[in-house]
Image 1: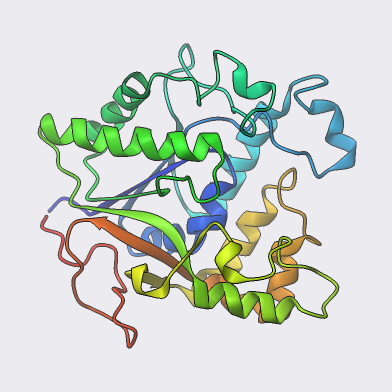
Image 2 (image 1 turned 180 degrees about the vertical axis):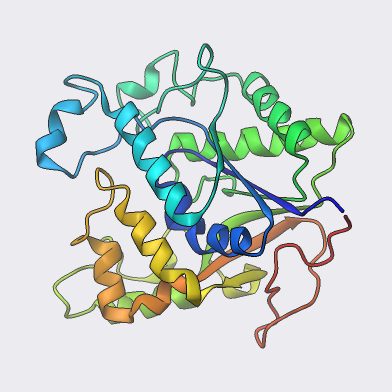
Length: 287
């Protein structure tokens, strides 16, 4: 029997670990197929390691290869062996930077890619691996980054095209976080000397969704250590003394053991938890 397969579509190296590290590690451990497609190499990322600041796009413009290595190291920790960048080496897309920034106007960036052309590159992957479930961002890319928005557009378009060509992904999820979880984080950070990314109320946090829109949760407490180690594998982007680890100090590492999703295509199926949320992305899948 064909083993179930999960496809994740992310914008930059590190997005996958922050959003889905536990989920990826859990399904790998269960023997499922897990494929990660990363749409850019994150060339415009802010560099948190002082001795590597010369790699910035405004200087040597050599951050992309470093982030490729970071991604490979993180995937080794999580056990993911099938990870790819969108497009071939002769046709790939560059990190777009933030909206209205100078890099955002470059013709070779992902934001300015033709959606159908980029989607065709992802369709090739879909028809090759035949995923049952896909994870990506919502229509605003979680927090409005151009590459996240474009990743959403490309992923959703590719799933549509693949369906027309004979492979229908059965369930599609968008990453999210319930407002109640954000509220818990804000309260925990108060008085700790660290703010919660400058957010004072949960409704202002762009990732947050009303609890009733969060359909699914993956609980993988036993994989939290792997997620934290994988986060540390992205040192140019995630500081061990930064807000992610400060949140862990205040809420305990357990906070990273649950990852939340909104089912936008397919039918929610048992098992459900006490809050009525699915607890398995593959529930109801027909192999």
